[in-house]
Length: 486
Image (tube, rainbow, N blue to C red):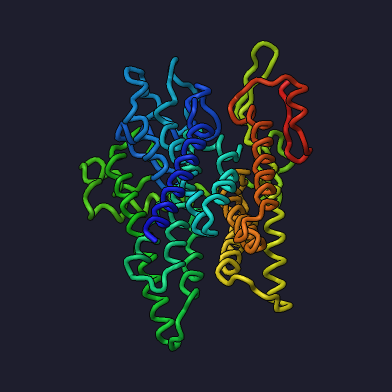
């Protein structure tokens, strides 16, 4: 028994190491190139530099992602000696000093992207309990072109997704336990809080709690059910709140002096900074209130999606699962060719998720309407959970009026990849148990197709030059809105 367990652990560790090596290759190598700013880096680098300079700022997103961007710059310090004072007086950096290195500001987003691959693999392992197939299906993350590009930048999505994966992994640990303690719900809430402290749309993870509570419930009275649900919910919300409170406290204490922009801070907030009392707990409420007001007012001012607007990079949530609209983050001409940074999906991954969601909804409706026999209750329940998470997130996005972009789909996309893998484990459970060679090779072919699409669209991910004909060979669908620079 001990020898078998050791063999299983060694196999699991081997796959984890392999995933990490591949992720380092696809996410981390030359992450500091191109040495030029793109998309929201102009905003986030300015915010991060204010932590280093101790200058107050307010922003529509919570602070944690920018804190990590600043930490990378402090640790590597690749721009020592350069005059970065301009960064402290603007929210949008238009010009960078000659020779400015992005190695520091992109460090942690890229590391979170790479190490997120290990968490993704572990989630798949916990879902299906098959290390080899979990490794194969980790290609859904390891070769996801659009997410790789977003991770190799001083932006927020990879940091957030790392903590989302951590929360889901811990959720799955609790999911398989007979009983859950108060402190375990507190930890789960804290992990969710870390994701929310990067971007607020991670609040969708709160829906995991009711699914967790109502799975494997022993026969209790209604009063005890309600009591347990309330106590667990209090623990979860407390963990989330404590993390958010601490992150904002760091924000207030590091960005503690008034700069050229007051961000409509109240007179009380200005007095707190002038008197050097930003670290005082008595000042916390005023500062938090002003920041939340700014976040609310900023969101109200974001324009709506306008398909008639020239150069509109936004898109409708209903079209995201198909990869609409790819965003041209940056381009540069050299020697008759053009290099692009295009937020372009890996179509094999994205379309497979669409097919999986259709199949999952059909399976769930089959059970609900026609009493379809469930062959594995645990896997079926998990399919229901992540399908509900996907649909709930997308429904929320449908009802947001401000302009939204393709990368807002990433959370739902990865919920969908979990549904895809769960369906595989559920539908082919018997074939997996008997080590079907046909299924094994079918999985390998699926991975090969993902790899082919990754390779084909890699020039958009890594800023590699293409001529016009090479570009058009990658325009598979008009709704991707891929347009070459002529």
